[in-house]
Every structure is written in structure tokens, then in C-alpha cells.
Length: 511
Image 1 (tube, one colour):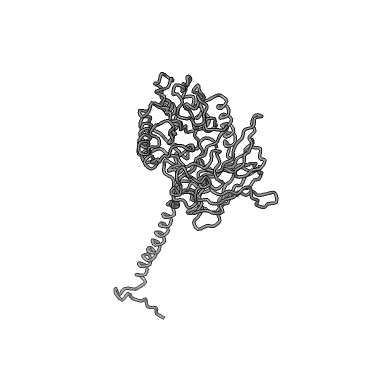
Image 2: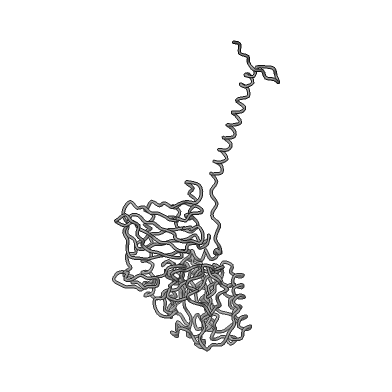
């Protein structure tokens, strides 16, 4: 039998020779297609997954900077220091103001040495006496016997704070019991804005301005031009945050016992608030449907009255912070350091229910929650309903404090969460349950011992994000009955200190 080789009809040559020539071309095309497709996939997977969209409202850069400082020491000082009145009448002779040993550097060092990043001074309290030589009134230090009328408390404190790297804030009371124009709407608002301009243009950077609507019963009616004041402050001092019942940057928490609501949102509706006519419950809780970011600011006292407080630390009539208050502040500082110097969670193997992005992407991994700060965080994968962080310890740990932080620049998200531990029967048992988190949430409970913990996010406005997780042991607290607004005792060196529990937000001077 004779086999004939097929011919190529175009060339007339045997077809098999052409096959040897064309087959590599087809293979090359196929190989090139798969190689190119694989390279593109690898290229795409090598790009980091972008962060989730922030959920509004979110804080300004000034609010974030303020939040990160956490604690401030409020310094009440003025004629009341010498007359021993809570609210001065405005009629005290300026000559009574004579702090012969005044030392602003001592104030600042006491604050800084004990963990306070800000100091806030009552530049003018309700009596109208000014701690700077205002051109708009003679009721000030220039009419006092202190330094022959040439002294300036605000200036010296500003210089001391700047040298020590401590931020300065000023309280300027709208209510003025001395100024004759008080009660005349236009005239007094011009007077107040003139004084505010002096304070904000003479002394360098001011990082916080405090004002309120406090006023005694039966006093003159007065309409304050708050919007004009706020605009002026932000115009002259763009880095400053403003505190009032209604913000615009930080709000009153609703009490002066250092206690925020069990549920406490930084979200707030400023349109729902009138300064001077606030609902303390609304101020304490905030609003999950709020359109504004206005976090609460707390203060806490060691003695009754603003002029005799731990947080609102009152220098004495000699112009110094007394040694008894310094000792209490030092104890307070030692207690904080003892509790929070060691995060037990850093000794655990940490894992998550899911992680945003491609496998092994560390941008949003659970290890981020062990890095202090708010700008790195754990993010779960999209479209998940199970959100949890697991902590596995080689050996059992004993603890009684949980700390959780959210990356607030991404918005406040978490609505409900709880912490579980694995008990001796190998079953998960709940330790504590909480609601909002925000910048920082601290929960204290009876001591627990376990080698496995689980933080579960039960409900969130969007995919929950956690920037920091802390597990600590508090050796000082004697827990009798812990509730959201309970008071507990701290025992140290045979002494007992009272401490109010609080659960959220930055505070003026105590944690």
C-alpha cells in the first residue's frame, strides 16, 4: 500500500512540513495567554486592599489631636482663691489677689509629671476678675497688689507650658458679675469678644477654649452670640477645640462626677441642644443618629466645689499647688502606671474570624490591635455577620479590665460587644458586655482566670474596626458591686481613695 502525504493546496508542498512549522506558533500563543493572565492576577493581588469607607460623621484633625491627649488639669485660680467663695460676687477688692509665691512652672511640672498633657486656666470666672491685664476693664491683675499691678498669670502660664511641651487651654466665663454692660446684649457681646480677642492674639497657640452658660438664679437676662464667638475663636486659633454644652468641638457630659453614659456616642445633634437648656441624659449618651461629631468631656472631683477639686486643681493663695494635692496626683499616676504598664494581650496568639483583603494581607490583620494608636486596625472581611477576635495564651492569665479602642477617624461603629472566656468545662462563658466604644472604652469586672478569650462584636453601624485591645489586671480595686455608675474603692499603701467609674470619652482630668 502506498501512503500519500497530503499536499498544501496553496504551496503544493507536503502538508506535514507545514505542521512542523505552525504548531510551535499555536503553542506559543497558548503559553503567552496563560502566562500573561497569571502575571496580571499576581500583579493585581500584590496591590493592597484599600481601606473601608469612613462612616459619617467623623472628627476633625483638631478633635483627633485633642482626643489623643486624653487628660487635662483644670486650674481654678482668682479672687475666689482668697475669699474662699465658690462663685465670686464681682465686688471683691482686686487688692485681695496677691499670690506672693506664684509659680506657673510648678503648676505645669505637676501636671506633666503626673500624666496630664493639657492645662486649662480660668482666665476669667463668673466674678469677672481677669488674670491678664485686659484693656477693657480695670477689674484685673493690673489693679491688684500682686507684683505692683504688673503681673500677668496667663502670660507666665503660657510661657511655662510652652517650655514644658504642655498644651494650654483657657476658660472664659460668659457670665460676668462685675461688668456694667452685662445684660445689654450688643454692648456685652462686643465686650466679651474684645476680651476673647486679647486672649487669643497675645499668648501664642491656645489649644482649647472653655465656655458655658452657668448663671445664678435671678441674674440679668443675657443673650450670648455663641455662633459669633465660635467663629472668632476658630478664625484666630484654628488649632483650638471649643467646649460648651453644645460643642461645637467637645460637649459637656451632663454631670461633674466624671461619669459618662453606659452608652456614649461621640455622635450628636447640635441642632437639638440649646446652650443653657440641655438634657443631661442626652449630653451623657449622645445620639446614634447624630449628624455632628461632638465627643463628651468629663471632669471628676476629689472634694466638693470647683475650687477644691482634683481635676479642677486649685492652686492655693500663695500661688502654688499644695503638697497634699500633689501627693494625691502622684498616687493617681502610680495607680494608672501600675495597671496599664503591661498589656497581657500582647502575650497571646491573636486571630480573627476574618480579615479584610487577600489572604495574608497584614494591612488589616488582627495583630494590629496590639499596636498602640488609632491609625492601624483590624478590619473583618466584607459581608460578614460573625465578628470576633480570639486570644490564645500559653498559660492562664488573671485579669479584670478590658480596654477597647476604635479608629475614630473612620467613624464610631460598634453598638454592642462582649468578652468571653473558656471555662474549665471547655465552654465559652461571658465575662462582660458593653455597648459603644469610640476612642476608648474601659470596663472593669471581677477577676477572671483563663487561657482563651474571645472578643465578639454583636452589633455595628458598619463593618467594625478595632485599633487597640488591652487586657489588664487592677490590683487595687475592691469590687463590692460593679454597675455602670457605681463607686469603687482603691486601696493603696493602707489608704483608701474614692474613684468614680466611667466608661467612655476623654476627660478633663481624671481617668
